[in-house]
Image (cartoon, rainbow, N blue to C red; front, side, top):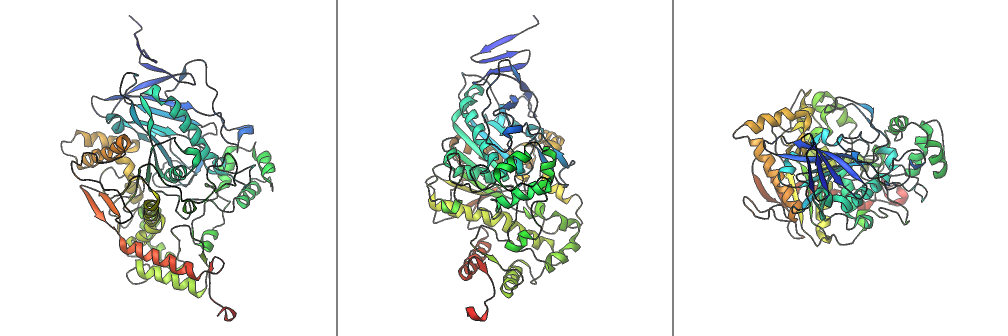
Length: 578
């Protein structure tokens, strides 16, 4: 008998193809053998949720996909959204990649049957600085989540100028990359039941820039009801560079660099609608002046989320610190212990450059403030020395101690913004907030190992770098052989840590509580009175007020200088002002 057909409700298995009926049409997915012996799962890759944002739809909000009549093959990942990557150690390729026709999502489910108990769903978002992203299961495989009966969904959304170009008006308000996600979440909510998922138990999980977008959606009325829990990993919308600034100026600059200058939102849309996506993504890199960040002491991204003018489709119209609405869903939020490794790897490869880092010190304000310093004033140099005295043992950056500089960059870029977010949300949340730090270093710390590959010093490189925790949740496919080796070992510490991590994350997705049974440790949520944090390493440990000295330093620093700012600028007083 050549053909075997099983009918399970709206699911059909034909010669190994898994056909599922959705509201948009039928999909043919595939059965996948897990890396874990004896397990398998089902993947549906490249599901269109919106029309291709090309031609007249470029720079416009997404339009829901109209569906299809025939069975749509969903067995291969689609290309990433159009992006331009700079050379870095963890990537073999750089330059332009992807495609504008990219509004697709992928679903991985442990079982496909209408008869099974509905499984919880995690929707995973990942991007770096809103300009580059990953290619779904080609980079991160969901095998360990499948074993725990949690569905994983990944979403492609527009990036860079194609996703975040804004003119600050209602014609070109921006945030189309976030609007893509909302359309996708609506499709998932309406269709996940066909994949065995529970539409009322969806967790939105983000890493780095994806975490910032989760945070924005957490506070957006447009996303209310689309997810019931949130996981924020190494990113927050309170970070000083989370939102773009001077969007009109950046939009005009983009048109100039594309040699087609336009000065209105309408003319920008018209003139750039037919420009090659490759040219747009390359020109993005030229739209911020290198001195701009130093002049206001914050990182600058040319195209990022923006605060929109008030209009019916606006995602966010006020900064998070201005929004006092209650948070009503559970949050898990945290960071990795040494994210400065990834952010400052060049100083590990060429520590002599730290001489220039000391001479031309990069002062960064860790969260959005109402002030900046007047560069080169005495008060500016006084503030710089305060920071140096706190972070550097002898008050200056030493070539022989790059670890001190890594600590500074980690704190201003990741730790303090996230800690500030935790404390702020504890004041307005009616649901639990679980705070963590991932501190383990082992064979699966892929990003850290990539950063150290060409390092000539490892000073200060203990702990976990940016993105390392993902390899203890997913399979990071560039090191897939390492997982196979570790899984074959009887007592692998890395696999023990991985299983602990996956257990915490999936328990949270299932119940809103990462330790519902408290077998090893009870993860206590943060309260207004007590800031507890779970340190994840070989063992789990609850700590209180971790790195409180750093928190106090930045709290005091920001408050003092905010109090003496004049019209938003901290500067030397002239005689007439005395």
